[in-house]
Image 1: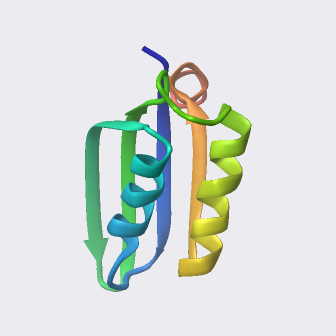
Image 2 (image 1 turned 90 degrees about the horizontal axis):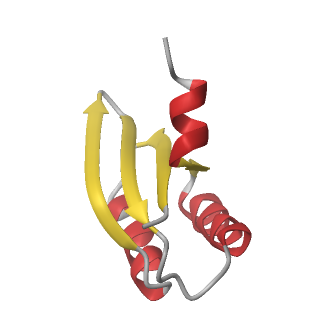
Length: 90
């Protein structure tokens, strides 16, 4: 399993989860866990996904998710799980 953390932030609007999840599904990426929160008009979502069966390389998946993020007006950050854990350790 090759796990990746995807963080999405931006102004809340209809369709954010659907667009990100559709992009992942189109590329055979499995969502392992998903958490989202809405505070006022601020949307935040963190996903843990498995990219081991992805149809594209990690770098290409990052580009595709960033493109979707730009289209829907949110910031998408994609990191390998190990990098995410290293950056957020106490």
